[in-house]
Image 1 (cartoon, rainbow, N blue to C red):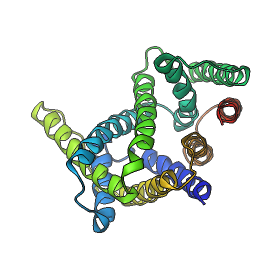
Image 2: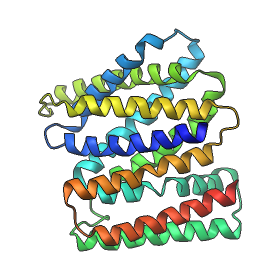
Image 3: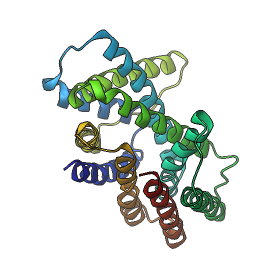
Length: 280
């Protein structure tokens, strides 16, 4: 059952990314995230309980990670084609492996090395394809924002598995959204105090974004909490959301070099599958 919940979460997550890209045509990064997250917190609020102080500290740390990941991810979406962003995000499981090597001294078997090699080759091919579109990864702020989004997303996923053992899914989702909303309000107020502001226009796409992310996160947390669930498998299934994002993004936004990027995406997914299978 948890696999089906993770799969449904992936589909909703893919549509959520496309809705965010569409909303960026009318609004700035922080306004979109603030409205969507606030609405998401309201949707889950009927199920909230107070909880222990130590749990709230853990969720504050999670909220910091998610806020940084979402903001940097939105900046990347604003500056880069959605097909480039979705393809690059597929590499997240590889970075989990790299961090495991650096932090825990883990050793890779031959299949894992093949998976890493496939992902690295795909990233290089993606950079070549992007340069032909006139996008240089080295000097592009969107690329660095995308890196930050991926790294903090990996950290958040690892933290989720750690904290979910002692918390209920809706408690985690509800309070995390509240804290993210507060962080975004503080960021916006700070930016305005420095004379920096973004235009904001109400857009019903914002409601769709909130609905998609609320449902996607709810299914994700329940799948993570289920007996016998495995973070590695859930992470792989969730990354399959890029297929939805890529397909819808290519159809709606008429971006360039779709065939080349599709080949890169398939190569990267193959590498991720090798990593996951060899880690089970």
